[in-house]
Image (cartoon, rainbow, N blue to C red; front, side, top):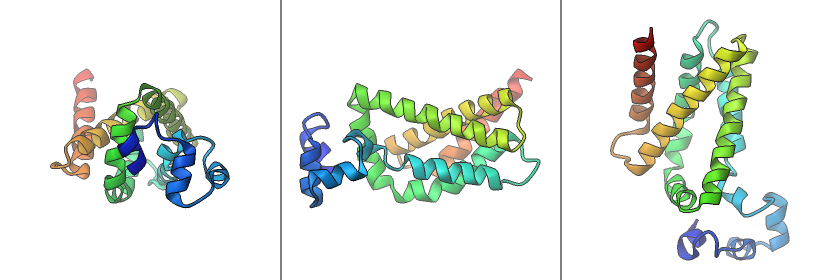
Length: 172
């Protein structure tokens, strides 16, 4: 992150990252297929934690409630990582290619959430719609928190969830 901040993403090489980390470039590529993945390394941890939380949710919990329970369960890890997430967000926001990559990662995560809901017996359409809506609220809460942490992440999750439920109730 420091190198990206100093040089910018495009002018930072994998060799420079490896050197700063005290490893060889070859070692770097054992861990990351390319330098973009340095920014997305936590995606597997997030996916695993969220899908496990969905699987462990109490029976009979509605799909959106299940998702928001999973999001809240992962909240401490996100909060503990704010000092990394904030500059990461700035690097990604400054690069259209990285922003596109992030959107692809979010889409894959959304698909994993839908699959986890389906495994709980949620119908295909409901699982997909809940995962997409839930992920939109999750991402919005995180990005607004990164931009202005004066309101806590938990409050942001609660607000997003409350507003989503209110929107759905208005459609009734």
